[in-house]
Image 1 (cartoon, rainbow, N blue to C red):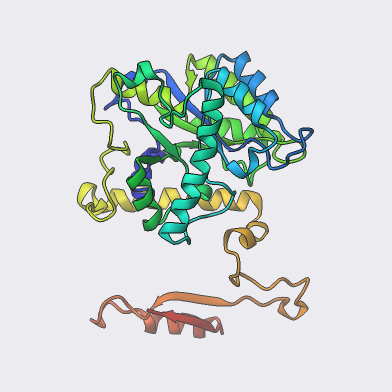
Image 2: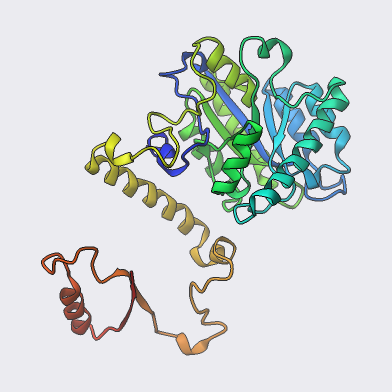
Length: 361
C-alpha cells in the first residue's frame, strides 16, 4: 500500500492529506506539474497553452513547480496561468539534484528561484506575496510556501534551509514515473489507481518532442477523475480545505502516523516487524517492476552517474557469457558463529563452480 510507506521513505515531506485526519479533503485531489514552463525559450516547443486549455476544459486547477531557469521567455504564459487561478511554486533554478550542495549554496538557489516566482505573482497581483494562499484564505489558514526537491532528493542542509524560510517540501502519493515511462495509457491508469481523497498528483510538463505523451496522459487522468466526481484543485486549495474544516495543526506535514523528524521516530516502534517487512517487500517489488518496465540498463547511467553497474558486451566483447556475483554486508552482522552462514555460501559456490566478490562491512 503506497501511502503506508511514504512516511518512512520520505520523512518530513508532505505527500498527501489523510482524509481520516482532514475530512475536508473528501472528493479533492491536488494536481501538480513539474519542470514548468519549458526547457527551451523557443515558444514552438512550449505546451503551457495546451495544458491551460486542458485544465479549463475540466475546470481543474493546478500548481506549477517551476525550474526558474526555464521561465525567461515564457513569462506571459505563466501570467495567464496565474490569472486563471493556478499557482506557481519553487522547484529550484535548474533541473538537477541539489542534495550535494552546501547549505549556503542551496539557500542562495532556493531564494533565487523564489524571487522568480514572486516576480510572476507580482506581475499579476500587483504585490510581492510569497505565500501561495490568497488573502481570504490566509485569514483562516496560515499561508504555505511550497517547494519540491528536484529529482525528489533531499539532504539535511536542504531541510535546514527550508525550515528556516518556512517552506514545505511536497512530494506525492499519485505518480506514474512519467520521465521514464512513455506509455500514456499506463501513466493515466497508474495515477488513477493511486488517486484517493487528499492525494497530491504529479506529472511533468510536456513539451513538443519531449514528454509530449504527458498531454494525453493528463487528459485521460482528468477524464477518470471527473468520472469519479473528484474535484481537481491546486495544492494551496487542498491545504486550505484540509485545515479550514478540521482545525488541525497546520505546521505538521501529514504522512499518516509516521510523520515525524528522522531523528525522533522509529518505524519499528509504530508497526509490527512482520508488517513492516511485508510493506518494504511490496514497495521494492513495485520499484523494480517499474525499472524493469523501462529496461534496467537503459536507466542506470542517469540514476547512478559515475558508478560501474555492468560491462556492456557491445564495448567489451570479452564479457560474453560471464556474470560477476557480489555479496554485500559480509560476513555476518553478529559475532556469534551460530548466526553466520559464510560456510553455507562457500559450499553453494563450490557446488556451482562459482566465484564471488564479498563486500565486507
